[in-house]
Structures are given as C-alpha cells and as structure tokens.
Length: 215
Image 1 (cartoon, one colour):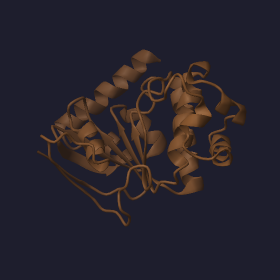
Image 2: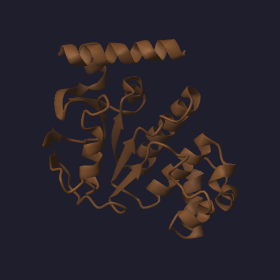
Image 3: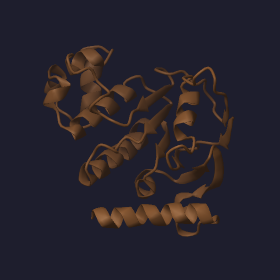
C-alpha cells in the first residue's frame, strides 16, 4: 500500500526513480488504479477531483498520445473556436488543427496536448514526465510555456518527473519519493541544495551528473 501525503499550493514536483510510486500517485488522482492496488492519497483541495473537468493530464510521450489517423481538430472534443483559442495560448497557428499528428514535430505535438488539457479549464494540471521524449531545448521551452500559462490561467500544478533539474523551471515545492514514501519535502532550492537524506543526495547528484554528460 502506498500512503502519500502532500499539498499542492501552486506548483509542486513529485520526484523519484522508476518504481518509487510516482505513476501510482497520478493513477490514484485520476481514479485509474488497478483493482488489486490501493493508495491512500491525501491531497488537500478545495474542489472535487474529476478527470476531464477539474483535473487534466499532459502525458509523457506526445507521439503516442493522439490518434495518428484523426485530424487535430477532431481530437479536441471542443468547438473550433475554443480549440483555436487554446492553440493561440500555446503559440501555435490555428491551421495546425487541420493537420494529422504525424505532420507535427514533437514540440508542436506536446503544445497541442497542453492546449487540449487546458481547454477543459482544469483547476489542477498533472504533468507526467511531459518532456521525456523531447530534446533539451524544446523541453525548456515547453516548461517555460506551462509556467507562463499557469500565471495567465491560474491552475494548480503537479509535476511528476525523474528530472530533478527540470523542477527548478516550474515548481516552488518538491517531494522526493522512495518506495512509495515521501522521504524529503520542502522548497525546491532548499531540497536541491541541502538534501537531508543520503538517498536524496545521491539522487540529486546522479541527476546533475547525467545532465552534464548530455551537455
């Protein structure tokens, strides 16, 4: 059983290695846990958590998130005026609505998915490793866009990732997961600079080493 307690005040990052419980947390929020699993997730909120209404998600891989045989406009599930409005929000031309996913770049596809997620006017936006399939330059632009839209639209944000460096672009607070438990929590800059546990220190150091190798 996973027992996780945290509060999303504005922009919160949930960080951990594979198998730490990040995906289970998102599935619990969306009511998508397998029957054999149970999660006691306590998230302080002043609104009901309803997928597709108060809660939207931006998934990990933009290349598999959309139907390849359907035009973008027909995957919005909104009227064309609303689709055009949110395409403008993510800095995409409305003409892309009439294209197929295969005709767009990875960065464009992720912006489309963000537009779709925000078009339901959610109070909470879930980010499930949303930049894993993108190059570093595109990743940074996507994260900055999400942060800018948050200030403009006003949703709360839960960023689930293994990329600790990326949390600095988006979040004020962070929690580090290990085997289904939060072992460290606080403001991003404090946790990254002064980790209290040996596990968190190793995780942070490994993340920054990998980033230096890529650059």
